[in-house]
Image (cartoon, rainbow, N blue to C red; front, side, top):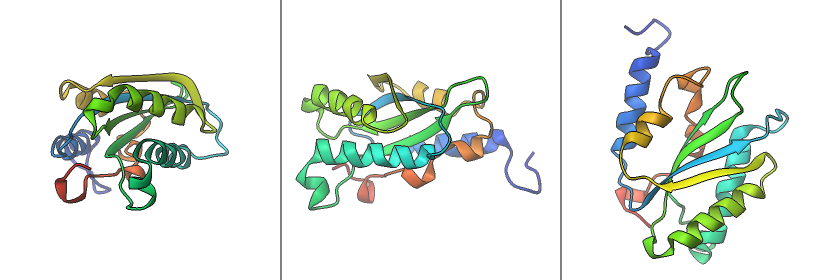
Length: 160
């Protein structure tokens, strides 16, 4: 049952899962990006920098001239005992360029200020990844873990 302050963690988690499952992905990848725990630069700001690099490097003129962006859903995790990291779904609209996508993603993350070299990237084969990234453990508050400022959805439900 939700409190007066808002929905319970469980109902919010279900809302986020349903939201993500309704997104039409072309070739989604399950991505984990580990961060330094330095607090003077926000995780969200660092992630935005990463996505700008990735969009510019992978989409090239489509990003610069036409404002195209990769579809991404980022969720941050971390507690006092768990190093901060992002779990995300990042869509590759060009399946024939999977290898380039993975290499560009890793390179873009490693060039950020908080990026650690530990990066895991795998094709997302099922909705199990969505269940995993929306789990309640390893988060201080599920309502603050979804990085809504950095979500990028396909325009009109279409892929790039």
